[in-house]
Length: 366
Image 1: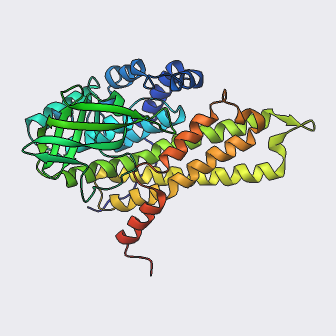
Image 2: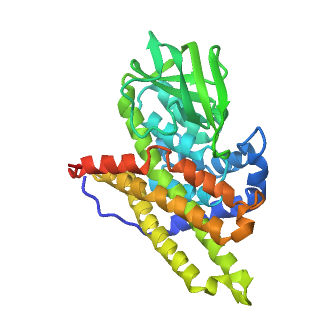
């Protein structure tokens, strides 16, 4: 359906932002995130409880009559902006967006029960596809025979925290509980310790059927994930730009703030323009998803094609303009650089989304 984009934030969205930012300032400052990233428990479960259960943010995309808050992708995008600003180690994107969107595309009592559980925040879900996937695969990694699942999926984000896995197969989409006989989750080395990856292995595990065809469900989930990942990348950029401007105003060289040097002004001005454009693309994507617009695929592809280079550029500029202090392990910039680099290949690279966009608007390369 046709839709007139609305890129401005509403009063309710700004109030939601303020509430989330205040909570993260109290419970997820840079020192806490850095300390947790160096442990074997990367996820902040106490913070998740506050976000998901106390504030009810896990169910934003779920209608009220199905156990959620009845909000939209616009509100979820605001939450992801703030989580990106703090590089918060919680599985919001993977559980409250991607897995939730998959369940919203399913019918039946089993899917409804799981959806309500994810919306409550007390259960964490993960779609069993590699984080790098942007679309359903031609062949699934897991085989199914009469509902019994066997196979391995690598690169599953936040799998170590998941209570239930949504597993796509040629026979359909199935639910599998973590800890069930035959289920193994093996952590993998990942650049971004705040969003850990793992390999999920199923050895003759009985799955609970959710949908007879997995591809449409997975496509819906990955599109929403890609569209809202851009808001996380926007949050990263917002923090990086703000902190870099602040630092260059305070850091003196030759008895002048380094931010007063014309060359640095130009670099920061260019970065500011990129971030402003990224904000427009991110807002357009979340608004199109919220409205169910016919242009949602195009909006997501445009936003994803633009976001990754900007986020990586913002992190690189922040690192360089902070000088020596930016190179230290104690400064949080490295967390933002790692998240920006990891996000640049998550849910499809910018190049793959440009290819998708070319197909969507019929401007294929010769």
